[in-house]
Amino acid sequence: MLMSVVRGLSLAYMPTTSVRECPEQWWDEVLGVAILGDGEAGFVPSGVPLARVATPVLAGPQSMCEVWRAGRPVRAGAHGRVRYRCTESMLFGAIELDERATPAGTDGVSALQRATGAAYREVFALLDEAGYPALFRAWNYFPAINAVADGSERYWQFNAGRQEAFGAGGRSTSGRVPAACALGSAHGPFTLYFIALREAPLAIENPRQVCAYHYPEQYGPRSPTFARASLALSLTPPVLFVSGTASIVGHETLHPGDVVAQTAESFRNIAAVLAEARRADPAGNGLAFGDLAYKVYVRNPGDLDAVRACFRAHVGDAVPVVYVQADVCRDDLLVEIEASGGHAMEDGR
Image (cartoon, rainbow, N blue to C red; front, side, top):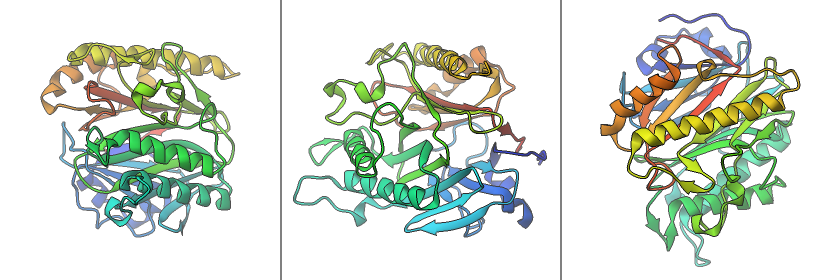
């Protein structure tokens, strides 16, 4: 295993077997870990925020770790059910809630909506108390995202719970919202992990797309609460998170049934977001496809080779990328791509 010495925020996609071998002192600078796939998690020290994400890994080891490190010692803590680690400028946290522990009530609010709202309320309470009020990036996972239960689609229920918690926590539900993704996992609890900052990042939108928080009601009674990307100019160098990006132009899905065309359209959207982020940076700094780390969500495992070939045609082979199976938020979307850059990218092989 080759691990470089870095200073500042860094990301590594590492086989779980490699993370198991890391010495105790290595964990002192870890902000948090997401285990992708069904790998056992007992090796993660108790003070490290941990998200177990049941999205099967499609290429390489069956279990991968998404490791975020600070490049310096971190401080650990807990607030309710949220576990977190932080530096002077940022906080990484994770929370898992079992929907069965928050059953649907007589008011018609589903268990998933309740769990989502409860998780975000706990997160916002922590951020306000700890002094990191600006939610920068959020990752959301829960099973059966496209299923209809308790009278509505589960993704719609998630959006309702999230939006209600944003409002209750004094956060904007449009404009200054974080980068985010929401994917359907194979099983497990509602899982949320996130990065927050002391200073608010810039919300970046895509001129090719309607802002998600302005989607028409055909996509649910409550709009999604996220920006297409989030740019933190308060960090040195600036860090950009590109939200989960799919084949949507305006507000409509393009290329239904064609996974290659959907992948290419996703990259056109990412290119538009990168251009907007470049314009938003007063220093004129910008990131290209080759400067980013990627996570690619593929609905149908049989599409992996086609998606990977399209990815390589756009980006090449020299960037960190992990491919996982997950259900995308619309049942006609076959692939979703998220990315980040500006932080260090460690070689975790």
